[in-house]
Length: 110
Image: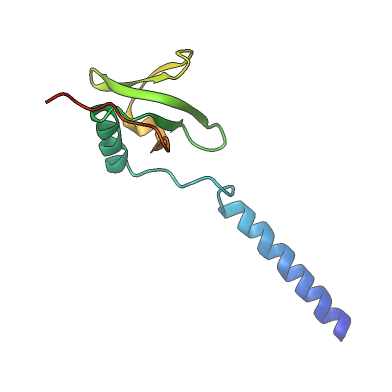
């Protein structure tokens, strides 16, 4: 009886962990930003000259880079710090956007 109970507990935990792996994002990967929030953050990043980390596309093919964004007609232009990556994109292509910690912003002239 005890052996059956032990086997059932083991089986239950294995099934639970398998199901959890199917539905969870990898640890450390935040959920995709809502469209309205992405647009707002892009606008603020440009206006306030923020240094940002931007993540394009969606899992498992994520492209993450640091640099600056600015409007480019109806779309946006991202330029990486080392100027090796230039990308014209729409806000819907952005998976995540965040300001780089400790980066000083450029003060605007009055």
